[in-house]
Length: 194
Image (cartoon, rainbow, N blue to C red; front, top):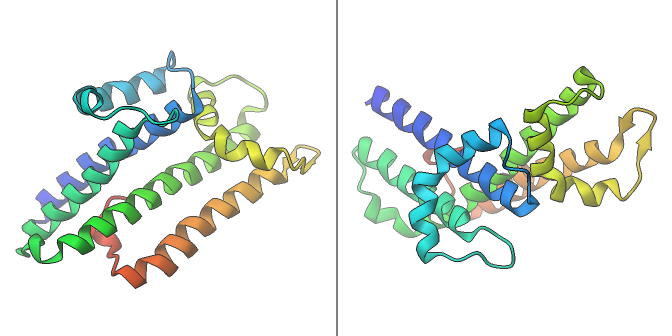
């Protein structure tokens, strides 16, 4: 049972994190002629191509990716319950709400760690171009941009970036996981990134 659960966890993590990256990159209009972007495309295309035939984009948002993230979270939670001998139909409304919260948590988790990666890489690379870091920084720009307008640069230290990381962390951990989650019976271990 543990081995099956571990394999499921790895597979769903790879696919759902890639779908989140694709969703964020589409929203940011990132450059997809990039090795990391091409990897994300190869992982997500088998799921997105059929979904896009029936789910249109709305206001520049890749709704197919977003809906697949939510459905992926729901499917993962159902499979985890089945593996553990629990009938998921008993908890279906809780699982649907949990899938919505888990999707928000996963998106914020990807943004949070992407910001950390970009922040660390900016110190290590010191102005050198890296295609992986470039794609990740493009992907998170819609979230970092509003904080940059506050102009909180002190020498090489960008406090606006630190402020953005804190806000994302608070949204993920305080709002979704500690405030809304307990009210609706959200069980993090049943979801990817929970």
